[in-house]
Image 1: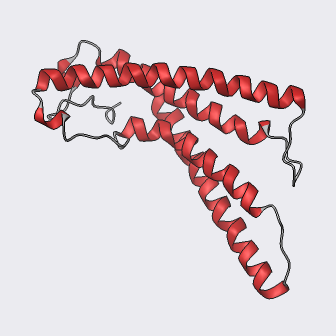
Image 2: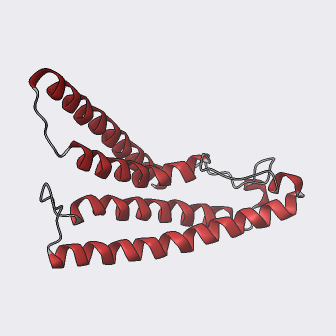
Length: 167
């Protein structure tokens, strides 16, 4: 179930990347050959970039490809690495829950106040939804990893990181 949610987020991030590529390419072609601009491409590509990052973060955590600074951790023994991995996962969960709550509040205020883009008039709550979806996927992945790996030292790989690829 968590793999499926993570993969759906990854798929949607890929759709955002392709859409961003297409609208930027269309803008370049239209400007070059027809001396015309859509005027909203930079705004929408920004929305798509934010969506791409947030929708892909759950898969990044799930696959173990999230950026980590390991030079200090690698110098520690396996027990300390296990504890640090657990602490990192708990902090990641807490931070993700706080962000999700704040993003939900942001969407609510954007919707209730009718806030939209100054140029295109796009309601800002629409692109903000992807931030909440990404955080929900990340929260699900982190909770699943914590529950699955709590008290199971065999679920750690050789470097002491929580195995997240084998669900």
